[in-house]
Every structure is written in structure tokens, then in C-alpha cells.
Length: 435
Image (cartoon, rainbow, N blue to C red; front, side):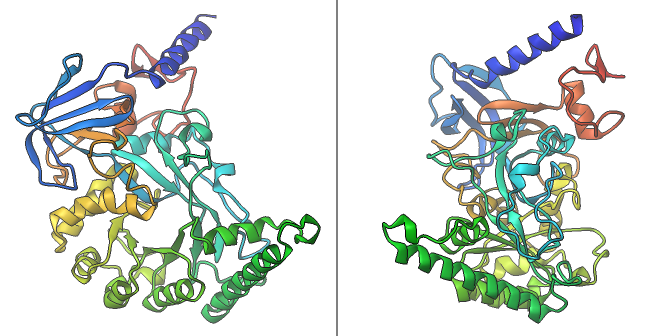
């Protein structure tokens, strides 16, 4: 009974916090990295009701009289990190019945109590594109989520003004999707099967148009075709897993042929065709791994891919592909990119605003600007230093990670209980410590 009562109190506090922020919060004295402008050495960030209401230097920024001041002198504030390619929550998409399954939604299979989501908060991540795997030519619909402390997927999902859950479409080529029939056995057959399905979708749209206002003439509803039409109509961006230079060009060729928007993911050999990628105007979400083994397609992955794409003028973001790269080490990707020649400015842009643009969320997240969501992190020092720690993470003004809290610190550094699903009854802690 006592445990139940304590749990009830905790839940009530959490619920009340979700609708709080009636008083403005002013974070003063930190170095602020807004991403869209120069670094502010003695900065002020004011947030209220989940939004940024002011950001600037101490001299030029007025702090509301009723604001609660938070002294963060000696710390660094920057936008929450955006991961364009994650698998936290163990979401699955299509099964083995077909290589192209656009009707599958990863929304329907994410475990939001997976500790991986909280570990991502510990790494400073605030927005994720959670995707199904790459074992299909098209494995299903992705979902864009905020790392709020929600207990259901509905509490994390990012929605548009009409309440629609936002996400893209996951596609892949190369060896991942090559299997026994009905899956393709060659690269040429892979592209042929994709074309075949998009041609069917175009025919499905033609039949709907011909039916006009007569419902008796409409074709039978086809959820797979509806998903593909959302791609063709630009409502869903294709997030395309691709490694080898020829596969990269095939992905670009398909996007041009059918007119869909695409973000290329991984592009291990993107440095070989950087000019072609730039000419196509296609953005790239890249990954850095210490040991490119595991698949032959990634053997030519280079740390300097980010620098080469930057020089070519390609919009470039980094991603974790968590658990390929741990979300808690996301800053490391940008740091290694800078070591290999990428500019510091573009490397930090690649962790934040570039990813926001690839998800069509640049008006809401990715930089510290007035009117945007109050998604930000407080760091102990330079974001690209190996010695720097994420001290606090905020989503829409609500603190979702605090390294000084023993429970959160456990998630940041690891240890007994750190990988267990979230427990509302707090079974693993006594007096704020793990047991």
C-alpha cells in the first residue's frame, strides 16, 4: 500500500509538471550556441510555456520581472540534438512476406518504456526519427518523436496542426534487402521491384481521380498504395539506407524518376560521388563508426565524408543508428568529423538544424530562436571536448534529464538497472540510489 501511495504521488507530480511553466525561466550567464548565429559569450535564454521567448546577450536581452533566474555561468547552452536515424524502442516494420510494405507503421511497435529513450536524453538528444530496419526495399513508415517523459507513444509523437502523427518512409538498397524470393536477389531486381510498386501507386491515384465525386467508382481501399501516394505527394520524406556509390546513385535516380523527396542515410561511399549528390540537391545523414566492419558495403567508410560533403555544398547531418552508435556518444560523431576536416560550425549544425531540416521540422526545432520549441541542453564545457558532460536536457521547457539526479546519472554512465525498461513503481531504487 505504501508503494502504491508513493507511486501515485510521483505520477501526480509528473502530470502537473507537464502543464507547468506558468512562470518564465531565464537561464543566465552561460555561453550560448544558437546555431543560426555567432556564439554568445554571456548569454540569456528565456523560456515560457514550452517556447523560447528571448535569446541573446546579457546587455541586449530583457529578463521578465517575474522570471525565475537560473545561474548557469561557466556552462554551455545549445539546442537539443536531432537524430535523423534511430532504432530505440525496438520498433519493427515489415515482416518476411514481401520486400515492400508501406502500410506498416513503426508507430504500432515502439516500446516507449525502453531505457534507450532515456539514455538518448542523457546524450542530449531531444528529437528522433525512429525507423524500422533496413532488411526490406521499403520496410514501413517512420515516426518523429520528442523525448518527452511520456508513457505512451502518443505522448512522444510529433503531430501537425491537424493532429496527424508525423514521419517519413524507410527505404533501403544494397545487400540488406537481397534474399530468397519474394525478396530480390540482385541490385537490378531491387530497383525493378521499387519501380513496379510506384507505377501501381500512380495507377491507383489515376483511378481515384477518374472516380471523381462518385464513391461507387473508387477502387478498393489499399493501405499500401495510400502510403506510397503520401510519398509521391511529398507528405512523407523517404529516408533511404544506402552505402555503395552505385546504390547511392540508384536511390537518387529513383527519386528523380518518381519525384519523391529523399534523404540519403549512411552513404559510406558518399565521398566518392559527392559532386553528384550535390548536383541532385539531396541531403545526407551520415554515421561515424570506429570499425566499419560488419558488412562489406561499409568497408570504405571515411571519417572525412562530412568534410567532403560540406565542401561539395551538401546539407549534411549526423545520426546514431542507435544501437550501432550509442546515443549517449552522439557528440563524438561531430568531434571526429571536425578532426577529419569538417568545420566546427557545420559539425554542430549537423547535430541540430541540419537534421531538423531533413524532418521538415526546422520551424520548430534545431536552433535557439524566439518562437521555437524550448528544446535545449546544458553542457559542462565545449560540446566537442571528450571531457564535456551533458548536465541537463530540456524538451519544450521541461527537464527530462539531470545528471545530478542519481537515477539519471545511472542512465548516463551505466550500471545495474540502467538497461531495464522504465519502472513506474521504482523497484530498483531506494533513497535515490540503485539497489
